Amino acid sequence: MYRLIIVDDEETICEGLCKIVNWKSFGYEVVQVFNDGKSALEYIKRVPVDVILTDIKMTFVSGLELAKYINSNKLDIKVVIMSGYREFELAREALIYNVKYYLLKPTNLEEIRDVFLKLKTELDDEGQRRQMLKSNQEEYRELLKLYREQFFTDLIMGGIRTKEAVDERIKAIKLNISPQTTKICLLNLYFEHKKLHKDNYDKYAFDATLDNYINSKSENIKYFTLLNTDGNTQVLAVSLTDVEICKLEEKSLAYMHILADKIKSIFGITMKITLENTFPNLYEAAAYYKPLVSSADKVNSKIEDMISRDDLLYLTKQKRLFLTYVNSNDSEMSRNLFDNIIDEIKYADINAVHNFIVDLFAGLKSRLGMLGMVLNTSLFRYEEIINANNINKIRRLGHSMLDDILKEVVKYKNAMDNSVIQKAKEYINCNYDKNISLGEVAKYVFLSPIYFSHLFKQKSGETFIDYLTKIRIKKAMELLHNPELKIYEISEKAGYKNTKYFYRLFKEYTGLTPVEYRESITEGRLKNWEEEI
Image (cartoon, rainbow, N blue to C red; front, top):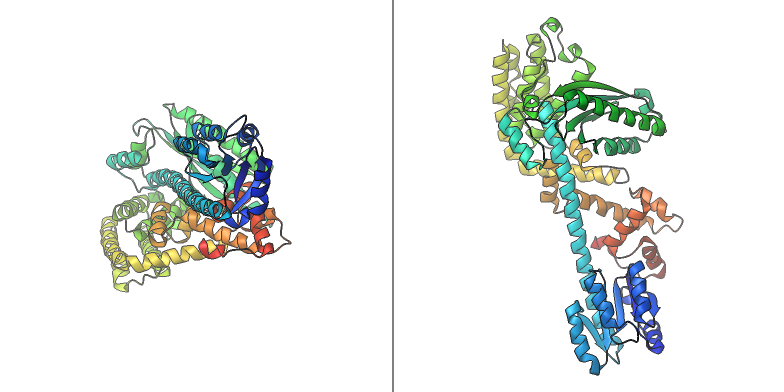
């Protein structure tokens, strides 16, 4: 319902308009009636209004002055002028103030109906455009955030290995930093494992608290989450000003200790912090790789058993990232990550390297199969890998296998993309009531958030946010049929912890507040909203 006020200094006209016209049938609710323009002017300064139906001439403040005030202050209010024939010139003057609709006195019901139905169509269209603009802006902000997170993830994980690639990505993510002077440090956060699995532990509230705090800026330091697994989170601190490395480390650790206190006070979970590495600039970070296995560890036959817990988490993240870039058919990033992995394990016993690379490609085959891509076994030359007697041969074989697999990915692309989006929608439909994010769903279908976002829009014709909102609003509509459920309960069941935000979103999508929608059900005048959205 659109909020309407009626303004006329003739009381009988106001009464007649309120009693005779069935405004609700046109989509309007008369929220206030005034007999002078001055009171109406004071009202719209305080209370949101969608439409004003006003006489053009009144004693203190005229309808024309109301229209002028609304136009000058750029208020989002439509004005419908009522005038007699002799005030027609004044009505024409009202056009200057963006008044498109007017009614000639004496008015009749048919004219009122035509004008206000036409106006409702205009309001509906504007609402849809606003919603689309808002959705696009939200999507842009979310994507820019994801682009930046992905850049630093790729940088630390070995996906970006050259100065040229660093410069290109910095420009693309619109981050005002110099790759030559920007210092970064990598921190690990550990959480009590047992506490995380208690029945009363709210994982989504915990993750949201962690994410909101980390993905913020403090003292000219921007923080990014690179790895978030059960019990471990890896955070990158990026200095936005030229500071000494020791100062960056000191401030970052202090900031994380404040987070640890918050986590302890809210969830009762102890968080430990370690500083893993620092880099004087982004170019050095791109060129860096750390051998995860030293020559002293050659006697062991399984690489996962040779490395620390932190290194194992790091390697697991690299493998997952490798899969997402193969799935996205990004040959450069896939090859860079593969090369970085090879460099990290090249000092291990050759048999351990054989087993690791075979497992890497076997995992890739399995994951792609889960997305509907059945690859020929001949592409996976495991026997040649096992027979390779040095690391360079293994690297060349890996490159060759990767090239062949990527050619097949192109052939399967359309069918696989459809399968990915179907799986993503199934996941959303089952988890809409939780605090799910684009990144979480992208991870579920083995894609990078950026690629997944573009693919979702391309295949479904709507953004991830729009689809998630649509599913939640539809569920809320179903729940509103149950009179025993309170609005705040419905809001939570539909995935919105903030009831006020839920109210606003529900009205944007349906044109009604949740209360009005429920009243429509009771009064039997409900249109088929579920099909429309």
